[in-house]
Image 1 (cartoon, rainbow, N blue to C red):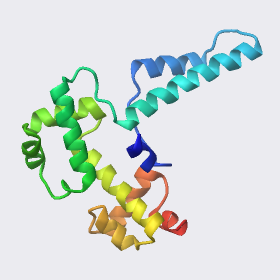
Image 2 (cartoon, rainbow, N blue to C red; image 1 turned 90 degrees about the horizontal axis):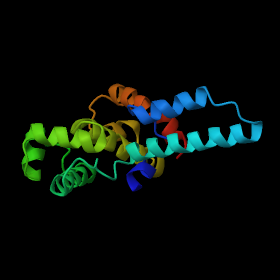
Image 3 (tube, helix red, strand yellow; image 1 turned 90 degrees about the vertical axis):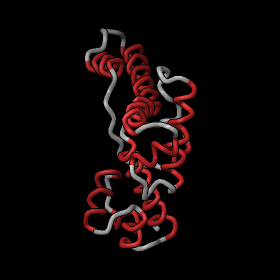
Amino acid sequence: MRALLDRHLAVESWTPTARVVALAEQMIHPPAYTPVLQRLYLESRAIELAAEALHVMSGVEAVPQLRQREQKRINIVRDLLESGTADDLSLDEIARRAGSNASTLQTQFRAAFGTTVFEYLRRTRLTRARIALEREGCSIVEAAGIAGYTSPANFATAYKRQFGITPRQSRAGF
């Protein structure tokens, strides 16, 4: 949950499961209850939706279809990505460090976290840049470098897409 909390107010995208779609439909077309029961019904569906979204975004638990050994491998890769050690590594090098090949790693990582290795890395680097902007007051050019961008304009575009605000707005809160 720590990684999720570090992305506070971040804009996240995720693919809804069949369960989420069913819950949303139940909220749009609720049964005819008394007003009190209908509010309770809708609140319960909203809580289930929030729990499902948080579970997917937290990335803490791997999907049960992965064996324990595979889950450990994926967690090693996640830790490598979050530490900054993997910033300059290729997918093959990351897979080699995890004792896997690139294709298998990518498949298992997507199963565990619902995203590719490099999309996860991009989000992690943008989060590091956001922390530097908000807590350390670094410049936008410095934050772009932290996130691995050579162009501040490209960084600003990716940043806004990820967090829903510009780097300048984040820095203004410093």
